[in-house]
Amino acid sequence: MSQQALAERLGIALRSQQNYEAGSRVPDATYLTHLGELGADVLFLVSGVRTPKPLLLDAAEQALVESYRRCNHESRISLIQTAALCAAGLTPGTGRAPAKKAAQRIISAAPHVGAISQVTHNDDSVQVGYAGGKVTVKKVNKT
Image (cartoon, rainbow, N blue to C red; front, side):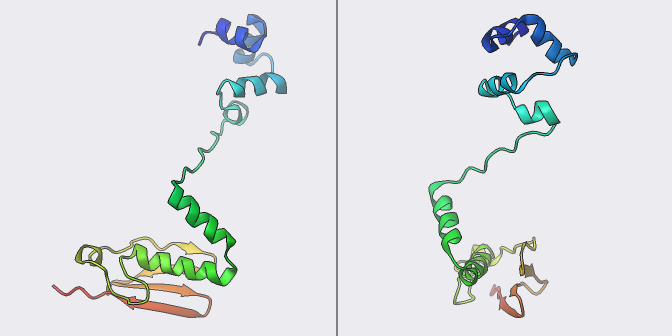
């Protein structure tokens, strides 16, 4: 969009727009508000830092997050441990991989949430720890 077109859309003089862009004049809050309404990243213009994009969740992910937020502390820990086991390809409660393909999958990262951590060991086991207790599940590849 040209400076002239932008100035017209914002209801200001072309010279004002040119001064803003040249840095010889500082725009007021009303100007920045209208610029934001046109789709400009006002935070970036003011600070040089981009506005973070919102995390878009599908309906199932949103339901999971909302359920997690309604849980008490102990239930949240249980959900995190269950998710860690599922992500490692193990079926919670059995310690067994549900499929041969999943048995080959190992989580390489060690996410840490508060006092909860997940660690993958060289012996193909996944350890999920919380406070003083630990749960270790050994994955066995039978080939």
